[in-house]
Length: 262
Ligand code: BGC
Image (tube, rainbow, N blue to C red; front, side, top):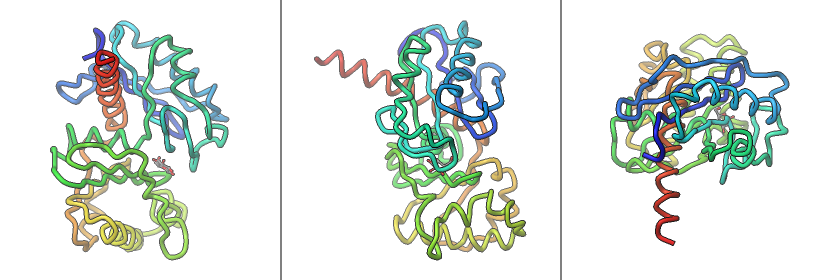
């Protein structure tokens, strides 16, 4: 592990920004998480100021261990590329460079569903399944993570595939259920279309379903009659934080190994 202390995971969401030090041996929080309301407007600068406060709050537990941050958008090389459900000023923002300056050490920034997928495969419902595992998070949007033999293929934006001539997320996310007041049966019919479409394109071994609504998985998962095994995620709203911390440590180790080779 790079550095002494415990890595931090910080999960940036539409309503709250949550962080905790993570015990990677157990895949669990090592202290109570800290939650702060997401500032409005949720500009990159305002959100990064909250992230810096959370890092400061856990300074003693962290020591000089890495920090991982999730963002609900595509992130390539630390730069946010899309903003379906966040302030559009995030597009093109180099979050890793900005946060490294704010905090004074490297930070790993990752898509929220990717972090959750890594955590579920490593410590939760994925249980190190081989082959292709697709985690979907059903919330305001639909986040997706592709993991092949445990390796993350980042930034799969399969929540935005076309379904019935429109954006799948708009029709099948949990926010659609709320917005349109759909019964579990009505919503399950949309999810059935969505997962059938995904499995015909990618033939995964397993679907994992995360997001807050996974606590009600027994109300809709049994209504889905699809080819692929489908299970509720188990780490619930901890998955993003745990996955971000895990990825921050593995990325820091990779960077160290690379610089050692030069
Ligand atoms: C975004 C994804 C994100 C998902 C869940 C989607 O609208 O495009 O990047 O993972 O919402 O937050």
